[in-house]
Length: 445
Image: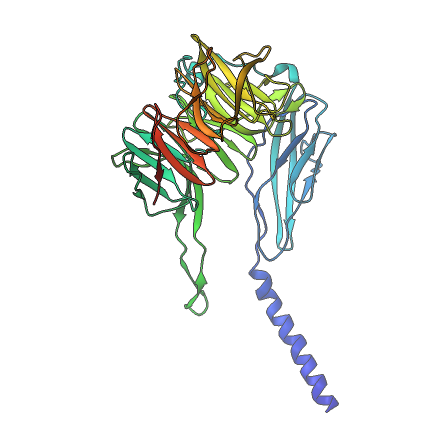
């Protein structure tokens, strides 16, 4: 019996020795895919991740590779974590070239990277590139639609709207009875420019295929479908839907379009892309040595007006610049651009629901007496708001007169403005009404 156990043990060891090379042959070393790093600023905390294609069977570890024969001047105040994150606060301007190593149980890969660090005094103020900022004649109507959630667009007498599952519907404004615009789902953040509709869409870019065993010539399973998120443009009423921007990551919101650019937020950072280029450019915004992050934004006359995610204050930065200007010292709940007696200004709501206005370039806020709101929007004649002092009803006032006019006898938590209609949301439901007020209809599937 003991002899039989010994024989079995020897057989198991021999089998393990035979299959180990085959197992090892199935693995692959990592492949570093990062080709460039975002620029850094002296005194500003920095973080950037090095990406790679990894073998799922074993973890990949990153290191700075000190090649004795090559240049390696990795900044002394930065570190590279084992997961590939470069982090720290640069203390010196310059161009730094260094090598990184990615290694797993199957091998290694190396990549020479360059990091440019500039002084904070070299940041661009911007406002001069008209191909990005435009000519300063953006329309006011619905400028804050994205800030209100981007759930609906009205073009002529057709409403386009999203349901809770991300399906896109279209409905006659007279009835509100929607039909599916497309069978696909996961649409988000609608906006329009002229006769073109813009939106986010999760898009199937590569369908999964059956895998075949190379040794036995039989199916062994199926690869997963590959999805990307894209910003698409769709000529309203005509064919020709196309991709405006392809995004590799999620965390996107607040899509707005001007006649020059598309502007959005991705992972708390502003991103712009010139229309028709599919080349996203990160719009970094610095206040001194602090990089500001955004949770809401809209573009108007060459500037991005955004709310800072950390302190809730309102800022602006030129669409081709980097220096953020702080506009309010208090937290902002809602905001919009509007026309006050021929002058474009900002209206905003603080945490006490009080409405104020101030010049676009900043200044002393002026309280709008008798108006309390939870959401704002505007056209060239009125400020539209959710009236917190009157049952959260959709209302409006003429800037400079500040006399509230109730438009609909209903409750709202968001408000959208279009050429002939307003739309408002209440607890997930969307409603449509004439711009002059009256009976509202519910947009429904």
